[in-house]
Amino acid sequence: MRSREFSSWMWGEALALIDRAERLQRRFFEVSGDAWEPPADVVEDGEELRVQVALPGVPADAIAIGVEPDAITVSALRNFPRCEGEGCIHRLEIPYGRFERRIGLPMHALNLARRELSNGVLTLMLRKKEGV
Image 1 (cartoon, rainbow, N blue to C red):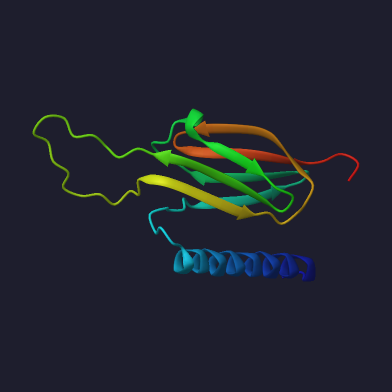
Image 2 (cartoon, rainbow, N blue to C red):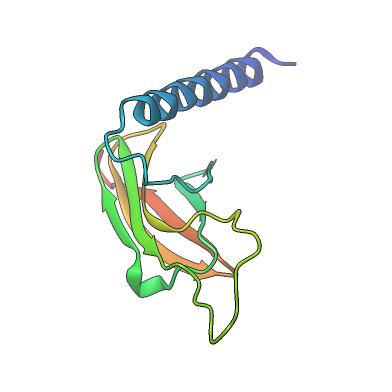
């Protein structure tokens, strides 16, 4: 493995470890305990950063996105499924309710260029700000 590839891999692993530690800390110190965090991927591709968040069953107009210098926040509410008539729920493994996910970004000075919700995956394309 070339030195640059190894360095990039190590940086990615370090960021993933920090993210896991932050998520664990938030869960431990969370007062309400009812919020959940959807899984997310962050991929850098040249001048763009692609953030994908798994949000099956969440309508696009219910999703709020906040862009900070070093992070992006995605929040919404996934409504609890309805049972019509005499129906009953036998298993609930998919989380429901309000969620908020703050995702640290590996670079600064980004603009939200595009957002798309397709097949339950929210894709956010962030571009580096010009002149920075």
